[in-house]
Length: 418
Image (cartoon, rainbow, N blue to C red; front, top):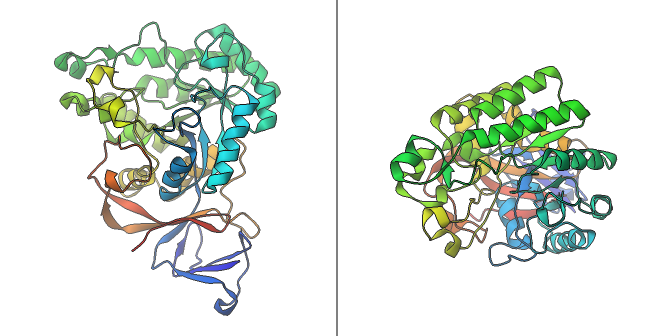
């Protein structure tokens, strides 16, 4: 099938037309030869976005999300590749579960799904999962997801064993012996009577993993960094040549713990929303290159999991459909970073860290792309989301960067109906 996208602005190019032939970017051909001609009406063509940290809940928690509904949400957000975390039921700690996830993703056919396998069996820090067999089945990394790899000894085993299979280790940074609170420990938590989780819990574990990475000379990837202290240590480690990479999320540069004052559980997440000082530190780290990737940590929950007391509500928010718009509105539009830097954060760097080979827009590359309206403001509405979850703190926000079209290998996976 031959497709032309015309009247567009092409990222990092002076082109105004895109040609796609048999699912790949192609040389110019005439409109008479095309099976479809799409008028972009001035919208911007970007490489398909890559999210290296999502939760699609299947198998086991399909009432929260399925691979099909998560894929639809990803496509609406402009994503063509996502990496699913292993906290499913059964846990993704063996080749059979990996194969099942990939089969479901192929049936959905909306995004490229790359499973991340558990580092320890059952997401525990006791016995290594079947990393080699899972690599053969298709995992691209290992992680214990929301559970930290708890002990230094087990983390060393995970790093060394994963290095043999050339796959990275992603760790949730939290010292469980001093955490356990429902929000950030500080003035707000004290004033509203909610037990807090100190930034030190995150910082201590980040320090440990930097030390191990430096000692072993093995890469480590630090998940959803939210603290000023953690970012400072990562920045200093990178300057020394330590093989450390890290990610953060849009909620850590757009929100603070003050949002929790009304006990709204849509602002409860893990790591928790931090202070204004931490929020500004996240922005600075995005700006100066300390942060390698922006991810969503997309975590859909049923309303019953959220419509409870703040301390008992489950952690997490949905993010696939709001992530790009938040990044563009609050980072690119004010001039904090360039669009080129945003594409590094949301496409090229995650693809590089996980060796996915995504983001190319040259002739012969898979036509994975998204078409974004960067000029017109829109209102983000939770009732129009395609994810099963409605747990978003961004309902009603006015944003820029609405997805008009997403294509994976030249196939439409999302199109806004005007």
